[in-house]
Length: 222
Image 1: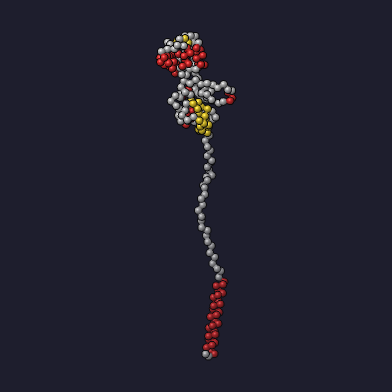
Image 2 (image 1 turned 90 degrees about the vertical axis):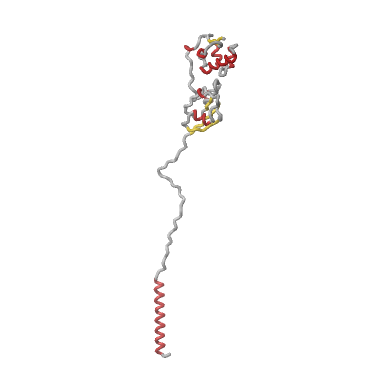
């Protein structure tokens, strides 16, 4: 190889080397591209609350002790706007011999009281305890009891004027403590037995107790 050829190859080699250095320098000057990954949105189980909503309060409740002529007596919880008839229905309904006429079925229930459903012909007894120690423990003292009707003295019969064996229903109805229902029971008993043999025999009539008989006795005769 001649010296001229060596000079040409040398020049080409140096030029190629310089070209490669030039390209490498450009690559070093360019900043590496930065890839920014966007966060993947994640599903959130959030409970939506409304700023305008208000907490719902439980309606006021009352506890009533239902006893007497009902199918399922016991302590019941009802809404404060419930009535006596609602308590009776919740207690399984009244028994066939219940005297609902003695109760005010429309009366509102009072928390902590006892509702007594009486039997037909039953005479309510007031317990001999201080009034402050009980609340409505008999139908007579119950806030749900029907207002008792008292007979004016002008309608009472004369002493010894009512014959148990001949008096009509209207005459018997004039006796103290006797209403149409009890008067009819006296007539029914008289018809079944053929008549009264004594005034004390009235105790055999359902709904007549010793106290009621004592109040009636002075107006009666056989």
